Amino acid sequence: MGRVNRAIELLEGRHTLIYGGSGDLSYEGGVNACHTDNDFLLLEQEHVPLNITGVREFMRGLAAAGPTKSGHPTPTVLMTLPMQGTDEHVVRANAWMVTHYLDCGVHGFVLCHAETPGAVKALIESMRFPFNDIGVGDGLDVGRRGAGGGPGHIWGLDHPEYLRKADVWPLNPEGELMVGLKIENRRALENCEATCKVPGLTYVEWGPGDMGYSFGDPDAHDPPYSPEMAAARARVNAARKAAGIDFCDSINVDNYKEQIDNDILICGGGPEIAALCREYTKRTMPA
Image (cartoon, rainbow, N blue to C red):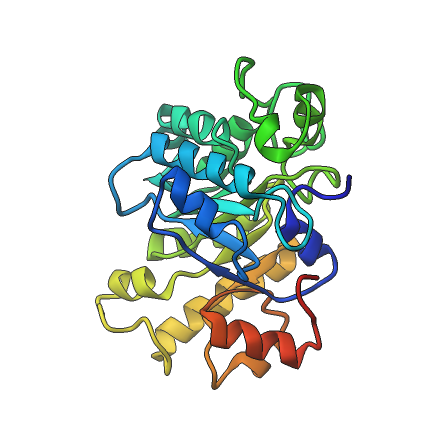
């Protein structure tokens, strides 16, 4: 068996990824979402009622309807976490969420309002088992995820193989878990260079909607951006380049070629955008 996480497989090939969501967190919702044309699914838990049971049933439905058209057990599923990345203490106090959602079988998280390196470090450590030692002593401490869970059946793996693969990529080249961040307010912006260097990250985005709020403009989420918003985006983009991680940004029918040419590999969008991006990069589906 190759990769469990198709999104990682595509990033390894430097393909543009288009993600979509699902509002139906149920077994039937998972069955219906299994054969999506999106490159990964992003489940919303930041602004909706906490629904661990729904996420668990959704993942069960995906696994039951699999494999996907690309031959993976399920589509890649990431989640926005209900907590914010204010500081290490906030994340440590809410790490139970990470454990519960990982045990549902999701493939990673997006931490919103990632304001400090300590918050990101705490998230990554809470996702890792103590025996995953890549990066320990070099920016990370020992992982804190405990025994007793492990949804290997969702990933199409037995339990020992799940334990081996349930680590963060690309820090662990064989890992199948992804970590994304939103640097989406002025406090986070001031720390973005250090935050992007925390080992274990896959990608970062700058969250123009909330960044605009932080600068006092609730309507600043779409281009053309003000000078201060453009500077914020440029700073986050420069920080992620220096750290060697990918960038997530908005994309539309007018800018998709420019975004792809500038190595923007992770974008939200619908079927029209996905088709345009795949045509431009000459990528056929389901590859």
